[in-house]
Length: 193
Image 1 (cartoon, rainbow, N blue to C red):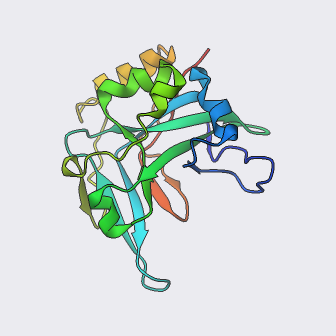
Image 2 (cartoon, one colour):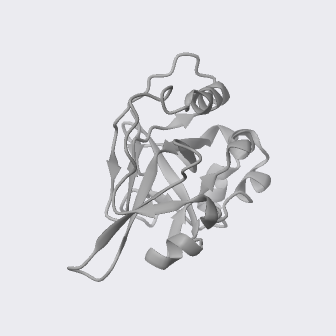
């Protein structure tokens, strides 16, 4: 298993779940190493809007991709390997509900570039996903019975082939939660050496 939240920079005291400042020397040190970049597959993600006491959760998905991938990084924690999701400016759809940030969603044709490209080129992928390719709802999209029935076998083949994994173990209903975002049915497909 992997934990969501990488060890913080020296001045930090809490695990970092979302990485935004890609110009920081601390994160550049990680991003320079392709083996520390990963894909974080998800079926949807949730962000909150509203004031305290009246917060509302909004679920975002990519209808053309039953499972899509966030750009992520890996670091070793004290006891377990850990990961964090890269974030960027919110696109027009997300900005309407949550004007701060959104996860970096990668287009399938960019998976290999993120996992193995030169780090400066890979970091250029940290841009808002096109809002016209996304939808938002009050709840997560319906769960599929299996990756194959959802038409996702190609995604897993790409993720795990890039990671050098031949027999992946898929956790089908693993939920990761934090105060700021929720990712449904996620698992981390990382480069394995």
